[in-house]
Length: 391
Ligand code: NAD
Ligand code: MG
Image (cartoon, rainbow, N blue to C red; front, side, top):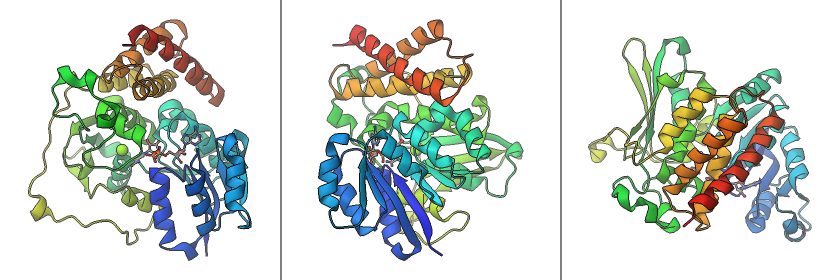
């Protein structure tokens, strides 16, 4: 029996790795919808090759180009936010949520209403709206499977285990591009330097977020929301080799580590075939050749994003939505040359200070609308903070 699958964010790094796995076994899948932000050429060629029902480009100015590229193929072309929601709502058995940023929340939310499986790479959905997203999935009988490598690793370490026996969850961090660079020089690094990761090949935004550890900050919050553990049970450790992705500590002192090559096709493939394991085209580790694995405590002066994550988990409510949006705006500011690398954390902290004092983040009711409103307001506040910080 073929499975109906859709990929939201098909043209990105996770989307392309997902397509790589699908194409190796194309007869097993009926591709429903592929969506992308702007890259029409990639979107159209994949939609044709996979015989998708519909291809959606978010940027409406690209609709004519998409129509031209799909002419005669039988794939329907569409564009804009409502077309993206419609694509996410088309009946499918498995939907990959791989749009980057808070833009992935509403499409993933719509996809959950089908009551099938959402493979969640878009960690921002859980950071901004974790409690209501998990409830929304439960209300519709849908399943969320983690795709982030650390969370897939934890999920795998928990198979057959009782979450009540878990003492702690440790997610590893590579330390990113600047782990050994003198802290005093960090505010002057370039966008190009921040866009290169020592171990993983990923989209630009998550790569820069890895250098600042905003990515790890998002993942700590993602761990709390997905696994329902307390903030004090979640730790991160710098592990430069990126071979252990996470460890789960149990109440009998055992630590279960998930070890594997830094290749997202493992976590994507696990979510695709779950609860089975299937052969995947990832490298097999030669431990004797690797020789040693290293660990060190994260340096909080180098990575101020980690303390911000602790603050978000403690304050709760809409703080996560404000945090993520401020982070996205600060990242735009860094990429656009408005602020330096270390200024990103200052902008996010200033945004949270301002919003928690005036906008009642902690006690507000969380709905999809209040999350999206908070997201919009936090981008404005972060823009103001950037003006005060700019160099
Ligand atoms: P990417 O930038 O390579 O791709 C993002 C995709 O989203 C593209 O298809 C892009 O066109 C689309 N997109 C961007 N902005 C959009 C918008 N406003 N509306 C609609 N579509 C939009 O990103 P990525 O590295 O593939 O990451 C995708 C998600 O997966 C992120 O949430 C990221 O944190 C998470 N993730 C990625 C990796 C990785 O290895 N790349 C690992 C773990 C988690
Ligand atoms: Mg990760």
